[in-house]
Structures are given as structure tokens and as C-alpha cells.
Length: 233
Image (cartoon, rainbow, N blue to C red; front, top):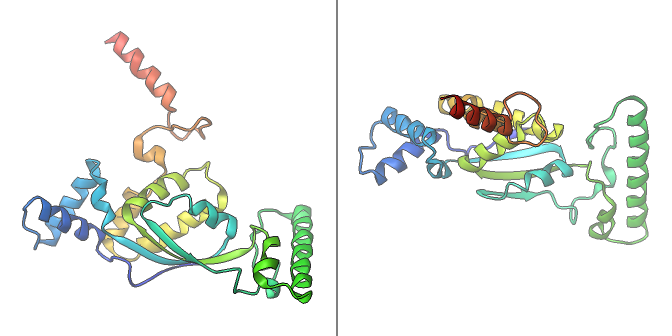
């Protein structure tokens, strides 16, 4: 469902370290030193350097609603999406080309709704209306396809937010799949996936959500503990 394209930077840490080394007037012909420099930049919070490596991929088989959530991460990213102006949706299979968050009886109710919508879409076309007008009735649960480019800095933020257990299950599944696909691209990507693509509570050490899953201490409890430590010091 996610395909990593060959344009993707295979040595993202080397790229970061190389660019940072030029600015620091340091030698950049040693890849291991570049990688070490890149990790130092990231760990010290100089994540602007992570804007140099880019990921290019095709995201296919996720719902339009899920992709709309992806679009909220607009910094450092761009995309092209399958157009409902030109792609005829009436041949879509409501069993296979729509996202199903339901089971059992609810699944059947949901499918009946999808079938009704798609029948209406088809009738509108038969009445002579163009696809771009009939498409206004299409549901957000229909699958779509995008070509997505995002730089590493933006992707780190995306992963921190969407790997959170409180993220919606479909976009969390997308995040997990992308993480697994990138991990096997190169050893540098494996390090990035294991160390940087984590829920935000793992990245900062506490949870800043109003309703925490309990994985990490909440920000409020952490601040209270710090104040108590100061009093007892």
C-alpha cells in the first residue's frame, strides 16, 4: 500500500552531516564522521538540518479521510492526489475499495450506505452530469492514492504525532507501515526509524495530551513532581 520511490535519499544521515559540515567548515569526505555529526545535530535539537533528506513515496489504499488528516502536516511536504474530476468512481468495489472501521452487523449497515451512495453517483452520471459534479456525493471512506514528498524534519514530526496511541487508527496504521518500509531502505534509515520515529511522549519524555493513555507521565504530573523535588531539595 506504500511504495518508497527511488528518489528517496538512501543516506539521509550522511546528507545531514555533509551539509552541516560545510557550514561548520569541517571535512565532509568521511561518511562515518558525517553520520556522527548528523546524529549530534538531531540529538541537540538542531533539526533544521533534517530538512535536507527527502522521502518520495506512493500511498495507496488508504481512505480520503485519512489522507485529509495527513494534509494537516503541510510544512516540508507536498503531494499529488488521484482526482475525482477525472477518475470515474462508479466502477469502485464497495467491498474492497473503501475503508471499513466496523465489524459484524455495523459493517453490513455501513456497506448498505456505501452501495446507496455509489448507486446515486452512477445515476447522476447517467443523467448527464460530469464526474466532477457527481463526485460531490462520494464518501470520505473511499480509498485514494497520492504521490507524497516530505522532508525528514517534517516526517519526524508526523511520526511523533501519528504514532501516538490516541491518533486515529487508520493514520496510525499508515505511519507504522511507512516506518517499516523505510527501515529496510538502508542502515541509516533503520537507525532513524528506531530512534526518531516514535510517539511524541517517547521523544520528549512525558505526555502533553489532555487525556493520556498512561504510557508516560503527564506533563502536569511531571511539573508537580519537579516542584515537589525543589521543595524537598
